[in-house]
Image (cartoon, rainbow, N blue to C red):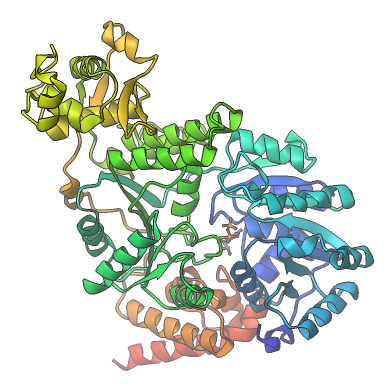
Length: 626
Ligand code: ADP
Ligand code: ZN
């Protein structure tokens, strides 16, 4: 970390009014969502478990109280890269922040520890493994601690989607320092995970803060996967030419292949997965953070430390592991509040594959509550993919929210409603055929029988004699596969992954076969349906429609890039796009006017005011000259 930053101007707001600190340090006029309550709760000595979506401003919930309370706020964060950027951003705002992790020299660590002891720091970021060392505990004992903040808290719960046994040690903080206000934050935790976290952190339900999960700026789309590489390119070209985005794949192979294909077709893309050297991973991540318009193709290994506000799309070429994982991964798009896309291509074979992986993970442990939870999570995910209802509604309900709309108007099923049809008879035919063939065959063979095909397998097994042979002419092969997929999704059939994907009846099948239950199915869309998508509404923070606005914005961006690279920090750490747009809209001429913009605190006014005012003034002069 650049030492000169630490020596720059710093602010001291210990004991100040939180609104005053919000204004002078962060440059914000008002609190968002539930920030104010949470800050007040901590300042009053309380603890908090905060479940709010990515980009909703969780960091401020502990940063601000750490500044206002006496002593240092200790932030536990699982990723080193995240720490560095957060600390860089804080120092830009004049906050006395530092981190302790394995990337530092012994001397730098000693200096930081000394600063903690002598009360010269407001925020200290540490990796979880450091936290429970004898030495660190002694340091905490000798220092005044304002609060503990535990980032990515879902890693603490085995009900969460990313349980890390190591992280459990973090919960010991509550035993060792019961009086120190503690805040745990996460973007995704379902009911069960929340209860578990409260328990482990010795908090009560009064300490739980859940804020609106909705990310209205994100458009959700799920499309049937046919030729994934082509579909992905069409999506990126059509909707996100030149934008930064993340593409998730399940396997390293697929990551490599996809990155290469995109690059061959002129979309610059970098691979990222655990098989690459850590140097290469670091380099790709840094390029993604610092350059504009790059695509990263990655396994789930990528993302935890990604604090980039202007990611315009997140695409899934394979199913994520759960809706929690999906929401967290897609939540990395549009953190700046500008329109973004969450796009996924999905097919039946992916479900079978994921089930197989899951059963492998369970390893004979199939009847525990843990196994049940995993199955439940997978079913919820498939339900999301197959729904003909509003996708946003399905997501919000899954996370225990009660959306006050039926249709959001910004997901694929809302933008072009799905046709449904009465699939009861089709379901009965398929189920009977599965029963007649002994529940031992996959969808391919079963549908061949329904279609009256003359295959080798059918001849060998003597399946021409079955009463269900050749009774399915009303649908084609793709049609029957779609029926099978949707019945599995609805739990009306199941896939036996041990038996090579054989379809089996479930308890619920009986009601359909007996005609006691109707089945509604959705009409699958052609994958290229995306081209007829409606145009999105104009983003809220569009540049003003005046001559020269674009030029000024570009000039300000250039200044920002220059200042950022001089200090080796990402550009958005200097100012967010939103603040640059505010400069274009208001064209401040004085430092006071500059300070009034959202995102400009006192230290940034001092540090950058003159430089940006000069760019604005120059631009105004040019305008007058013409
Ligand atoms: P999270 O940790 O929940 O993912 P962040 O803390 O990174 O979200 O905040 C997302 C963005 O919102 C950041 O750019 C942050 O500066 C901004 N932000 C946070 N609180 C406010 C606020 N009260 N007013 C305006 N912007 C805010
Ligand atoms: Zn919708």
